[in-house]
Amino acid sequence: MRGKTAVMAEPTSQRADADVGSFLASVADERRRADAQAICAWLREVTGEEPAMHGSAIVGFGRHR
Image 1 (tube, one colour):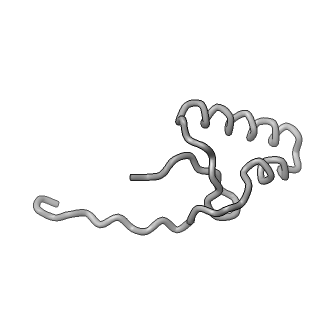
Image 2 (cartoon, one colour):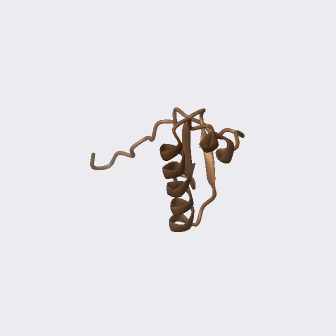
């Protein structure tokens, strides 16, 4: 692709105002819920970013630049 600029597609999921904590608390299986909450805490620490919902079932950290 010499001399051409790549065009990035728009993301298919957009940030939502939904509460991440409520979403994680709604996981029915107790073990999966605990795992999801632990992973969320770990990713928050590692990335330094707050979690945000993207669509109705994706938790993201930070923004793609």
